Image (cartoon, rainbow, N blue to C red; front, side):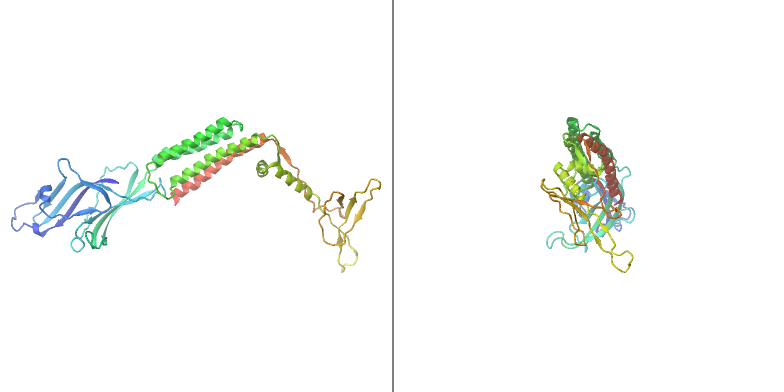
Length: 413
């Protein structure tokens, strides 16, 4: 960051005291020549990148020596300093920057730096930043430990730190990035109202929307530093890109279904079964129907009491089945009744030459029999149009939910 600073230093040098020698003489004022003739503290900015004295004809330096030896030393400087930024919540972030002044050659045993008691830092009233707002600022005084064992900066040095908090203004990003990206995502949903076989307009609309959004995001991030962590703007980019990509994938899916020739078999006319029927291959659907037809052959149980009057005896139950065997044509088919000895239910083996017919119980109880479910068929065009109609509702609702989570994250956390 770059700043223009007017630095004012005040200290007392008893060697410059002259009130006893010339009581009637006022203060002595001068510029750079006077500054070169007296001692002034050598103070540097610890986190500076580049600094220089300001001035048109010469350096803007002002020195004032009072009769009691008090010296006021002022100069104007241009300072470019480092401010380490945390961009995890960009562009909803705030940054805390600092400017640290430290003595260059005198440690704490010879020089102590202190802030003025009254208004140590004054900010220009007409200060205006294009991207940030100055929220607050404060000052600190500290001691910097030794950096080296020999040479300069050996020992503890007195330091003065000016800290300020900058909050990023998001008006520009809302108008130039977030709102246009919302419009681009909504534009990708227009394909849901086009015919499923309109490949050219739907493909052009989807790809152009994706490319426009990538270009929009590139203009935002080209001036940002390359950091390794994910920023809030990148989460928004990934979310919107996912919605645009899913809209293109939905077009490819319904286009494939539209070009099918065979009808789609569905178990029920519901969202779940229509999607399963559209995705499941025809061979798998036939296998499911075959299994259900086998499961329709169920067992019935009839219970008889050996002694209805005697309540102390146990009741015995047995399964009754009517089995019809195939015989040669010369012999007349004779139905037989097979009564198994086991009291437990056994599965019925279906063979080519044996047909087993379940015999209902005594009271005709069919509570154990599963209800028969009839399969329905839909044309590929009906399935494709049904998916488009559902997408017109599902995509906007999902995008609204994504916005609720995103804006809650950037403002609440």
